[in-house]
Length: 387
Image (cartoon, rainbow, N blue to C red; front, side, top):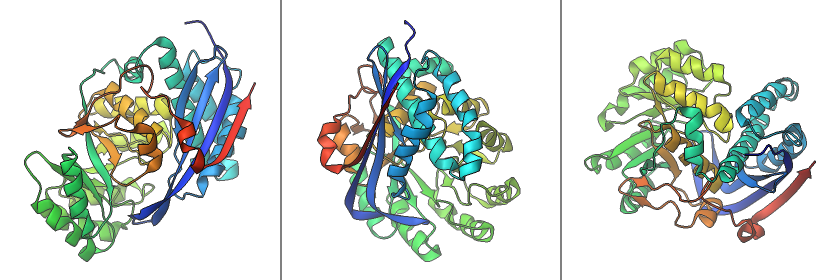
């Protein structure tokens, strides 16, 4: 492949209201947003990525501006032959700005979206599906078998049972319900769902950092009756390992987490602690493929499970799918069960679930050329920068 340089970038912000709000222990989403980014090299090749921005939704336009005015200029005119090295250089250069601005999350997510798009571009130029191109940086473990999935983001309350029934009919065999709304609500939500689980089906819960240490150590044992596959983020992600150790000792199943960590060192500490069975970096939130592939590889090497976190638009979901397929551990792909036109409007039936898994898209790169024009009525901002 001849050397090419990054010549142009675009950022597109979309937002749309939803009929049923998405509830979490930290807040409620009444709309869905997405920042989709496109990169183009000096040969005219293009690639697509996504910048995480789903909560608070007001951050979407801000993150697009961070991408276009702060992050992307550090890559414009640069060679794309080694995206891992380029991402590492940009990540290090952004350190001072993270400290100076106090806006570490936005800067990290913008850099992650850029990296995702560059890897997509590279795979397309090589004529490879993205998962196969990524196999080279995670040790070559990828193959084209269907990837197991789970339905995520299920709201608490009586409606959770109906949502699980709907997902089961659609082919899902694993489900994750949001908890952290008080013992009565949490246990009342889980009991009918757990009772109806079939053979081979799995149930997980996500606390979304909603418990303090005392509550976590009190609530975790109460969840034993449900046979959970994991308990996700029972504490705030930045709590000390001594607290996580107490929760892990009280929990009846494995602890999962990682979506709110940034930096290889933080992930390695999580892996080395032995307290987390499932490691969940979000490639659109920190690291892109360049950072998260290394985390996934380290997790598997330590006997942990890598499950990519993602709850956003179509492009980030596809990137998560390809990285999980490249790694090929025992992990599942997180698929948001809530309505989201910024996912469904681009994917269509591309990721149809059959018997708990989805087939990998054919073609080059992500396997999708996003029809951005179809979302034009939902676009609130479009930015373009070039050399």
